[in-house]
Amino acid sequence: MKRRGRPRGTVRARRLGVRSERLGVRSERLGVTDDMFWRSHQGMGLPLSMQGLWRFDATLTVADLEPAHRALTLGPLTRRVVRRRIWPARNAFASDAAVAPIHVEPEPLGPGTITAWADTRGARHLDIDSGPVWELSLARLEGGGSVVSLVCSHVVADARALVVAAGLAASEKSAQARTPEVTTGPPTLVDDLRDAASQLRIVAGGVARSLWMGCRDRGHRAELFAAAQHSGTGLVKSSGPHGWREPTAIFSVDSGDWTSAAAAHGGTSNTLFTSLVSELVLQIRGSGPVEIALPVARGGDEANSLTAAAIGIGSVDECQDLSLLRQRARDGYAEAGSGSGLGPPAGMPAELLQVIGPRAAHALVPDPGSRDGLASNLGELDGVLSILAGHRGSAIAARSVHPGLLARDTGATRTSVAAWAAESAGVMTISLAIPDPAVASSEDLHELINKTLGHWDLSARHW
Image 1 (cartoon, helix red, strand yellow):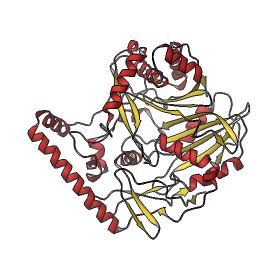
Image 2 (tube, rainbow, N blue to C red):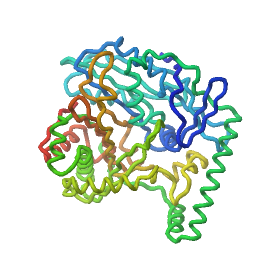
Image 3 (cartoon, one colour):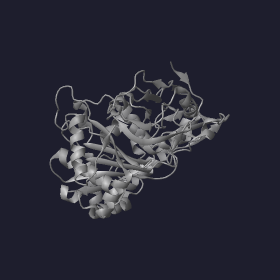
Image 4 (cartoon, helix red, strand yellow):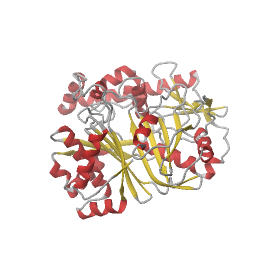
């Protein structure tokens, strides 16, 4: 049964967004990156959901989760997308989305089955137009303990925004907060007219500058011609066996062992994580070179507030040279800027993707920002998500999931390995998804993981 949320208007406008406050209601537009995930939700690309998982040694009850559920209902995740009335105004968020009740798994989970359960919860249908756009779930473990899942549409939150929202919901202060008067509501026709005019000014000026640069600079002109001739064909992946499903894995490694292994080879915790992802990509692809995306937080409170650096890896030997990877990562971060590679080519303004319409935008940038691998490190989360209802968590995982991904869909993305890391309670927890039929099953993925960790004398505890 759905119920309507009454969320707080606590999220500031996006970097590219505008707000209109009237009678205690604030309208907030989707930014360019939000629009990318909205298009994928509409079938133009691979749909994505974010999922956070939280393990506890204690056995939690529904009553333990109810304050957090109420805080989430009042928080920034409870939003739906309201489509624009006129072109080229942007779509907007409204905070009256339906809210799902807490899901409780009736039977306890056996050893090694948490990931499969998480996959099931991650496949939950989310309706970005009316809600629910998130769901909180609870399961008991056979050997004692509990696991909590929070899944939401990627349109309303990336991994960082999801962690922040969950952290606020878990705090006692947030759970007891009253609903404020100002909420996020649908824009008026006047709002749409103003936004349309603003978008046209930005895009017209940006396109004119790009074309002028093309007249003066041969390299820029070549980039414009290359963009005009773009065929839209992506990487061709193997078709995979009948009934293939995306292999996934979640595992934990002792933080002390992980840090010591990285330091012994001249690297950092993040460099070792990048090495792991890079080697897995090379093992799956069979050869290099490959590119790995390293997300970078831009700061601010946007739902999707990341850009990405990229580094090139030529061989497994390079993966094991942590000093080399560390220097390449530094260079990649320095060049990341504020979203290079996520928008249209040839210096065209990013807002162009919103003005030309979703289908045209998908044709121009079908797989924005994707590389052969993704290594997203959320860092230390103990200070954000340590305790829920008085119970201290034993491990935290966060990841992106592709609900219902089939082998025929994997050609829509270049990525073969998507990985997320989070450190808490003395363990490094890594989540992996493999949108590549070259890996037949989760069991095969586990073998690859164990083999790769063995190069560093590390062992995994698979969830």
